[in-house]
Amino acid sequence: MTIATESTPVAPGRPISDHALNDHDLPHTSTVTPAEDMRTMMLHSVSWGAVFAGATVALIAQVILNMLGIGIGLSAVDPAGNGTPAASSLGIGAGLWFVISGVLAAGAGGYLAGRLSGKPSTSTAGYHGLIAWAVSTLVVLYLLSSAAIGIVGGALGTASSAIGGVGNAMGGSIQTAAQAAAPSVTKLSDPFSGIESQVRGNTGSDPAALKDAAVTAMRSAVTGDAAQQADAQEKAAVALAKAQNIPVEQARTQVQQYTQQFKDTAAKAKAQAIQAADATARTVSQGALFGALALIFGALAAFFAGRGSAVDPTVTRTAPTVLSPRRA
Image 1 (spheres, helix red, strand yellow):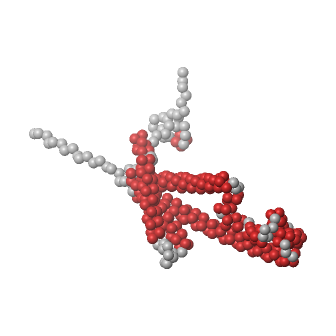
Image 2 (cartoon, rainbow, N blue to C red; image 1 turned 135 degrees about the vertical axis):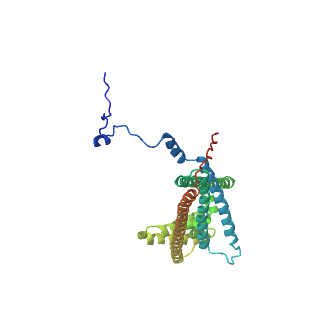
Image 3 (tube, one colour; image 1 turned 90 degrees about the vertical axis):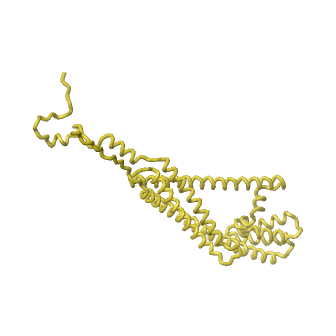
């Protein structure tokens, strides 16, 4: 029985044709021995012990440098206000120090990771430094997110307990407790709150029904449809006249004053909201920019520090064997 083979027989002394050389089915030989393959894999393998050691050093260095920055920053603040830098200057300085401290910490961790990896390859040692930076960054992000979640959850829990305790003790509603705890927020969201207090205060000891009717009519006059504003203002004037027992003409004057007060308060609240939104956007943008710079420069510092810490290969030299001379 004859077994067909995929190799092409070549006669002794006959040159191999180009077809045979380009035949992919022919067995190929490699000049790399299995021992050399094993050394290559060992050379470029990841040493996780070195990575975790470098990440730990990077985290500790980051903590130390941040504490140093906080100490220097707080020492520049004067409670009396004499010589204290502006808030914008402090923010920029804190951002720059955050970038510098991140680069220094990443460089220290990357150097140690590359050195402890024991790899004589500069690229492999550099990648160890980069991986150590990535691990330390993930740990920092996890701690920051956990702290933020804990702070928000604790604040919500405290606020809920406080509101519930006030409601149970005084029998008030949650809305009343929240308004009592944060009157500035209530005034900002409802410009009519100040007008309502004035209307109720000017009605003296009149029945509550007249006060409620005057407040309702006045709210409709300042917040209602512009097409029906004249009719609503007239109804509000009549309601105010009944509640305060004053002439309708005088009540119309008060309605005009309350309407102008409402417009001014609403415009002021809108301007404050726009300013707050702009300040928040600038702060978030500045923080994101400094964070991105810290991450980019930190990664570069870790890689090049690890690359520069590659060890020199250890070469074992044996003394030559000295043969004793033959005896004559």
